[in-house]
Structures are given as C-alpha cells and as structure tokens.
Amino acid sequence: MAAAPAASVEVTAPPPEPLEAGEKKGISDVRRTFCLFVTFDLLFITLLWIIELNVNGKIQDRLKEEVLHYDYHASFFDIFVLAVFRFAVLILAYAACRLRHWWAIAITTAVSSAFLIVKVILSKLLSQGAFGYLLPITSFILAWIETWFLDFKVLPQEAEDESRLLPVMDAPVQPPFVHPGLPSEGQFYSPPESVADSDEDGEDENDQKRLL
Image: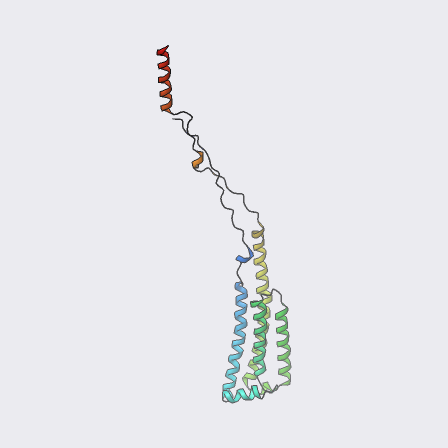
C-alpha cells in the first residue's frame, strides 16, 4: 500500500490584541491621591470649625450665631463654605470630568487666597483666640498645596504615562506565525490500486495465457 505523502498545514496564530484607550485606568493613581487630598481638605476644615463651635459655647447656639446670624467680621462659617466650594469644583473638574488643565484649580486657589486675605485684614478673627489664626492659615496652606500637587505631580505624571502608552498603541501588528501541523482529514490520499486488485489482475493474465 503506497504511503500517503506528508502534508503541512499552515496554522495562523491569532494576532496580538492592541492596547486600546479603553483598557487604561479610568483614573490614574496620582489623580486619585489628589482627589483624596481635596476630600481631606474639606474634612479637616470642617473638623476645625466644629471644634471651634464647641470651644466657644454650645454647638447649637454657636451654629445659630454663625449661620443664621452670619457676621463677616466674626464668623468662621464662610471659611467652611470656602472649603466646600474648593471641594465641589475640584472633584467635579478632576474626578468627574477628568480635566487635564490647571484652570479649575487656578480659580479655586485665587478665590480662596483673595477671600482669606481680605477677611483677615477686615475681620476680627485674630482677636478670637487660636482659631482666629488656625482656620484661615490652614485653609490658605491647603489650597496652595492642592495647586502644587496638581501642577507638579498629577498633570506631568499623566502626560508621561500617556507618552509611554502611545508608541505601544501605534505599533504595527506582527505577522502570523506559520508552522507545520497535523494533516487534515481531506489531505489523506488513497493509492490508485490496492494490493488485492494487483493479485486478481495477475491471476486473470495467467488464465488468458493458458487458454491461448
């Protein structure tokens, strides 16, 4: 029986899947740290304000005095509202909208700095003990730390990560590898004549010769 010729099958490996923008993290680690610090800013100012309310009397009476009967020259409530303003704008811009520009934090820092400087000059906070110094100074420092962190950490780090990712995304897809494999069922060949047919043909020829 004739041996079937060996056949090779071209098997194409699936092309590597390119990195897509959707596979990137929704928010980078450094941006997440920035958002946590913005949240810390709000919580820390809120804590200081609550402590100030408890130190100078009952918290219910102090809330009525500072919120319902708000006085720009003596109340700390506006410093708390300023922290809420920074938190709302920065989280909306850099967490929800994922902004990659400094204009949002420039607005919050400029508004915070101008308001605190004017308040310290015109108000009577410095005559109200330690919190008259602590709350405006802390709010001022936290606002500028947020600006520094975004401008020197978040935006440069994200730009560097994006520049390293773009060459990988633009790289050409490698050609498929070709390697021999097992022959398929359709590639087995049967010989034109079997051994049994050859024996029968030989016997017929011998019979014809005897008859002649």
